[in-house]
Image (cartoon, rainbow, N blue to C red; front, side, top):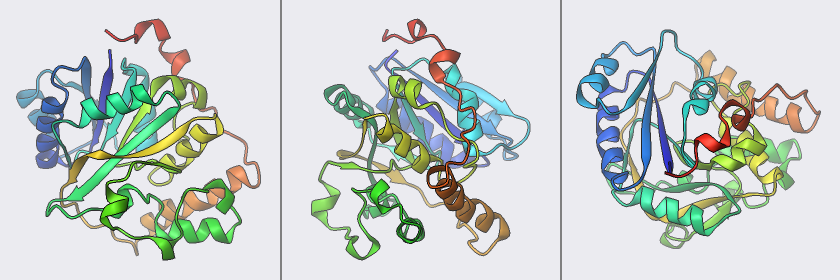
Length: 278
């Protein structure tokens, strides 16, 4: 099988419906599977998927799990050569999967790829390429980890001009909104570190991909549309704990050699002979 698409959903029924419709169109003529993990929704998302998308593989969590754990729990169930992690509030363009697959096929050292993102008005979202937020960039410089991210622009150099928008480029960090991963690379890196429960899990995995000698890319020749999403309360304790806590976990892990958790190897959980391209 060529492609596995995973969407983790929590109370995003309407957005999920649009996302799944676009995913099905984009995956046409590609050997694929579409997996939805419902993360304890209460908005009848499960009923919607079961009724309107019976061909989608649906897994239901009785209690809400962190994103990193939800992904880790479902990754061993996938069979694709490439695994696309997609937020349920995004619409995929019809040519996205074909173009992303071709890009990965043509770049064997690509561990992962993210794509150009626009908002519902069509305006380019520069964080689709410059994934690190200003807070993360400032923290990394402060603790002396800038050398870990040599291809990341500083905050002062960020520009969302058209040249950068339509320019393919190697990047340090894959965007967690939409990232395609090479399964054989996950066999080497292991899956997500669950200490990064809500934020930073993509930063940690992207860094481990590069440590294994592979590359991360921003691919501009296709796009996804990000639908309006509920604003995050950045003054809440929950946000502070997970967002800023992830920074200190990252620093402790790589600066002070925090013991690595047993990040399971996806290859051990699902033998390679079972996911060859069909």
